[in-house]
Amino acid sequence: MKRFLAFLILLCPALTAWADDLEPSVQLHAWGAELDLAWRPVVLVPHAQTTFWLGGGALYKSWNYFRDVSGNALTSADVNQAAVNELAGSWFLGAAQSMVGQMTPFANGHKPWQTPNLVEVYSYYRGTVLHTLSSGSYFSNSNQSDREGYVQTAFLAGIDLNTLTKTDEHNLLTGFVLEGAAETAPAGFQSVPVDYNRLTATLTLFLPVYDANPDSRLNTVSVLFGINVVLDHLSGFHIPSEAQTLVGGRAWAGVLGFADALGSAVRGVEADRFDGNDKTIGNLDLRINLPGLDYPEFVRSLSPFPLEGSIIPGIVLFYDYGAWSGLSDNVPPNWVTTAGAGLFLSVGHYGSVQIFASKWLTGGTPYDTGALPITASLGMQF
Image (tube, rainbow, N blue to C red; front, side, top):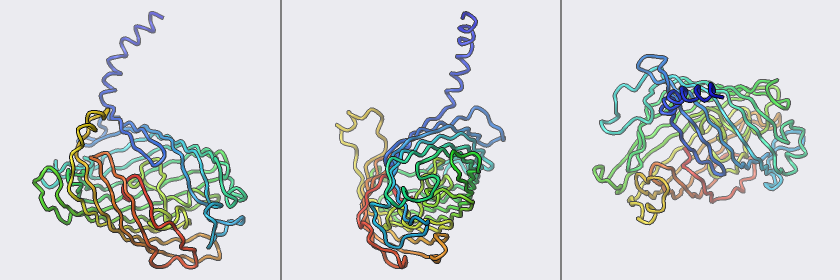
């Protein structure tokens, strides 16, 4: 016991030094939370950032399965019978290595970069437990091997080119992130007979259009233009049903990978309405930031953590496009467009909430277009 205590005493300084290199971050999801730890104890490439990652999260998740018993896509469906509710827990371990740092210390002379890494490669192991709590008849009566849930093992790798700046006090940022990612969940590593491979390309770009008073601490009126494009391809002999409703990569939704595909990514379409093996998503946003407000004093006094930035309400106008294929043998490739407007509230650097109304414009035939026109969400679309 004495030797063990002596060992702990000697180990404490090393643990303290390691702890100083840890950077925790919390991410909120609609019905859950995620805790990630970044650790940078060494530099493997001179003048470049080396990061080891450990993270995990849990959430309650609802999605829809729009297929009949034979697995064919339903052109008209009862949303209650399509609904699937599940508990999802996920964890990951991996590393990211900067290959090229940003060319200058700061963007535009005063805005810090979102990341000091201009080019970064990454690789992760991810484990996921999916437990089905309830499901409508479409999924419960299907022959899908994952209908009761399962334990998934996946491996991810990718490369990012990132020129984004951090969001400033007027809710503006500039630059782009371009990502190429690959993911595999091989047979033999899963608790049920499923397997898939995924390739994903993502481009997200922001361009400030207008700032009425750039020198003011609080925003007056400013305008931000944004573009988001995602290409996603799945292959495999037994692709799990939920995987066909998602897109991959880490740029849009992080390593845990719960990023909805056409349904929800194309606003105004029911969640998971259009699944498939090949998906294309395009989003255009015009975000109008209205006059900013300081936090009320009673909110500051009650907050358990420091409140940074300001509260900025705003208006968003959007146009979305989606295309898909690989639904079934008797349904050809298809596409859909929607448009709409909404209100959002940005709370410092902690995130946003929004509510929007949307309208199905073109495409999507012969599918039923009876989606809910008003939707609330945690965070902006991209």
